[in-house]
Amino acid sequence: MKVDRQTMRTYMIDKLIPEIQARWPREARHETIWIQQDNAPSHVPVDDAVFAAAVARTGLDIRLMNQPPNSLDMNCLDLGFFASLQSLTDRTTSKNMDELIQNVYIEYQNYNPILLNRVFLTLQTCMIQVMKDNGGSRYKIPHMNKERLEAQGMLPTTLSCDSQLVQRAFELLNT
Image 1 (cartoon, helix red, strand yellow):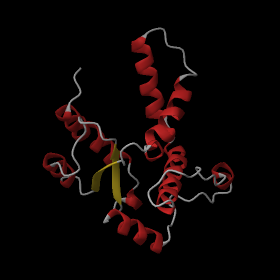
Image 2: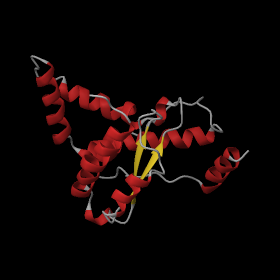
Image 3: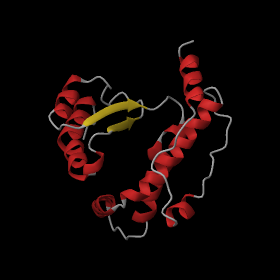
């Protein structure tokens, strides 16, 4: 199957948006939902009119964004989700490619979305560190004892960031 921009757009409109609608928590319907893509040429442009029209019909605020180029720490899929999904799939036995695809699909459908919070928190910590390093990558990924905080019911879903740091990052981007 050829995966080009039209294929991606169709998949996102026909499959992804309905899944988001079905699964997004009611109490968070007013919040912006960001879909992060890497910079592959086949991905949907962030200002795609067809995608925007499909989103407008949902009543949700779904937006596309591209990750910064050449920044592995900013790719939350590589950062944790794919590795986590692969470790779950590796526990199953697949005799052929069709069974492997089916096993990945089953693990994806049964994936606990609460676990994704850990991935997105790591992404947020990386973003903060990049801003502290003036856009650089000379930092270590901070650890925040997520499992312990989660067990205590104290794991946040978002991290706050100093407004002066954000302002400085905007100034750097505009120079």
